[in-house]
Length: 419
Image 1: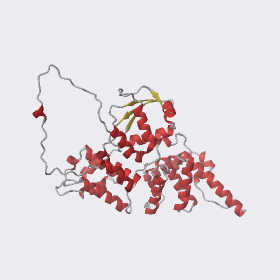
Image 2: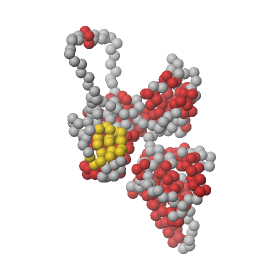
Image 3: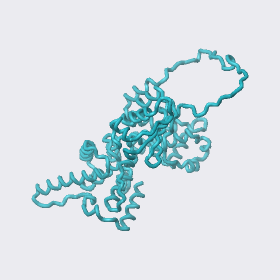
Image 4: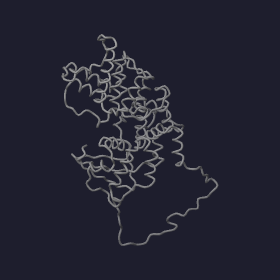
């Protein structure tokens, strides 16, 4: 995406005050104010009676919003992820399809979005935000419904024409998108229940959401579904949610999940086509989930609860990008005798956050600069050259060399094991 690229906005919906309030109350704590601002700016690009905007440019959008192209790209990614925008591209031309926000009851009953909202707000603020949307308990038990039916009040009369209205603006919401889920495998492992009949589109979406939120693979989901059969012999959706949550808490020592980037965002990745060792290392840092990257450092492949919590802090509290976290992990393990010191890592993470480090290249560069300062201090203090451990990618020659066939094979195996 370039500043000179053009775009159009399509809006086939009615954006109501409830939509605006829902976006601010529910979506904003998850996607942030920049993404929300962009959403309303895109809506504003369309005149009241139009469905598609005139041709616009990103340069105009940048001037109008005072956002950088990087800010806009990140905001669009978040809007797409939560279903408020769909992006289509044809060369240097983009189309943004706008969707309504989910209704409050739909949002709060979506396990993925609801958990994300809760984790971002905390219990006290979450209760305050949700309270105005809760219905008061009104009992109609002692009342009789005396409402008139349509045919009791109106009747039809002959007419010479019949009008059909097509393509009328309406309320259109978008579903969250997930990687294809193997429902055939799920069905094959659940005997004794007609799972195929139960798997409506809404229930498939529920399974997808729970699988992503609680990191449950198909085989474990089979077992959870079998233990979620209610009194009538049918799958109890509330019990399913509860069992998925219990599974995750058991696996993660009682903690609940948060929604985080799985790997480095695409727009922050290296675009070089070179084949040097350094570029290959950058590729690994950018394309591996921090959990699997850290897991690869353990001989038995089992990451400790303490280190998992440290990863969560870096992703959620420090809000470092996944690729940057991988560089940080690799750097600290190499210079600190394979130990992850929490206070030391948090100090570095805070420093990088203040410097605005967002890419793998930036993280690698700052590591080299800071480590050279430490190295020089050690050498001056001891008046002798003392060996200071450092990652292999610090070597200047590393940048120039191409990988051997054996190294390429080793890299592929490493990526396969990590993903």
